[in-house]
Image (cartoon, rainbow, N blue to C red; front, side, top):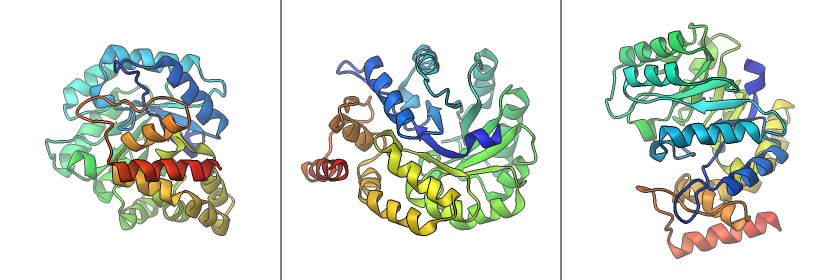
Length: 294
């Protein structure tokens, strides 16, 4: 299983139409685009997919649609987490895991649990889940951090196979890589940190930019896998402006604008997100997409 989740994971957006219903044709174009662009696996219903504003019926319909429109039979990592351990356990008990290769579960947010609370939360999820779990550490969204010591402790649980690290803390990543089991997956959740995290032993990236531009992100990953950091650096410099625009304008708002410019799906998002960006940023997105495509 672990080897199947090396490389480029795409944190899929959820396309919406003007009525803010799921745009199934847009989703199909997105799946075709990312599969053809070199995605190694898909992450479904993570932060980028606006999981917080999608109800359970929609989530299941989206998952089923993706599973039935998977020409490359890519592995699927499904976002399933929350800040109420009992509720997450109920979701696991009710979920049909057919065709799901792993869960990606975000660290409990808002409650600000202690490290012991985070450990116990994931320990219970691991005991209940019939598929492997990937931890997701994203302090900028959750308000709390999974400390390296806690990750290392959790890595000893057989059903917890890796972590998507989006803290931006390279020292923490080194600590995890040094002390966790050798087959424990260290995956970057920040596109711009793909090279440094892979350089210290990370196995790839779960990428936001790869929704619109999977090929250059795959090129970065492959260059690092082939121990060619100079080539990886060249590709990284090519996409840096696009990555920077996402950091400035927000995820998934900016990626959806990029996808709209590529005629893959529209830029609609659900409240409390809004698609509005200032004119200067929109012009920079337009020029960067055109320049890269040209």
